[in-house]
Length: 592
Image (tube, rainbow, N blue to C red):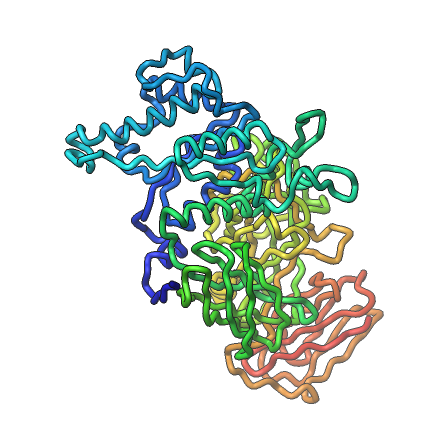
């Protein structure tokens, strides 16, 4: 029976990152397939609002878990007391169900006798069951003086696909012997070793970071890492489905926000949906009042593409559901603005911690990397404020994200890129000369699946405040916030041989309500040989900005009626002239 969920439930607290009380506590033992960098276990815990006690260690085997339990160091008594499920994902291709050397009582094993795969599994299962039972004798345990102590819930797992036949068959035998739940990834992952891809390769290879040979056949070895990877989300979903037989997942909910903030008239817009609970989800939402629906959603967060329908496109979530939630909680909204004006930076560069005195002003890209001991990178971009309409609804800094390099494993990770600002002007910067007087403006997540797209930071309030204070230049710093993500992010600079250059883009819709002077009252006179422009017909002093079609500013300043604007002698071709004051907001084309 589906449940109806109302606003204010704990799922929304989990969604928004507020302090929460865990519903469950899951503990995981495993090796490289289970460490947190993978993500599947952490996704499972999120779906059940469970504390993730991930004790997996790359390079370990089941004997290492047995050894740690033998020496009383795998978990503390307090951890044991609160763990609701112990998941074991040690999946080396061995016969773990063999009865050779098996002891009746776990206390009969010596340390050396638990170093084999089958005896290690037997010891771990028996020892965990005994430890749970013995909590009834511990005065500090919530199970103290209960009849049977703590229920011992152990969950076993197959390999993530069906290449390891020996292990997959034996873990089924072991699960049946002990009547334990089994996460059967091998049968539900969506492909099988028995059917190769059209190129003759095993299908597991396309989901893996490396390969291994079993039975002289090459298979995918370690799955691609990161919670945004398809294979990690698929593994998580299969595990979630098994755990729903034992535990109740948190209800379905969704929070919507804009991913695109200010886009060009010919661009698509994107909003982001973050779901809770177990996939697949169904979502109904409206775009400026028109209803749309998406079904069979298995990805969270999900980016949804829309066609802008006005200067401001508003997306509102209406309903969300999944298999155990008929009407979940919806939150948030997305406001995506369309803007004609794109302002190019007057200066951009990045600095590199390992090359402290090197300037990268002329490089065709910008680099950003996390807070490492030696290889942190930060990017800097400056813009003239003269091209910015102080009354615009939104101003967004946009940088085009085109590559990401990881130091080891290929991953898809989310990098929280912070934006900071000051009003200083620069001609060059190095790591040693980079400024430290900045104000934090905000943050935008850069996700692994967003390559070849603009990343946008909302800088409206801070930028408008600087313009009101009289600033002629605003400089933004981009740097990685606190994260375990390790990628080196690449963005095009203004020197790039690519159309997707960094820019400030402002919305077309102004919020000041000023009355524009009709265009026929403004007269523009050009003197191409003298590189002069004369503006007549303005009643009050106004801000004038002249920039090329690619956004390069060639003049910015305040002018009076009939005052000459003098451009550089190199100015030639087509330019745009923008005039702005309390009663005038006018842009026209200039040919020199």
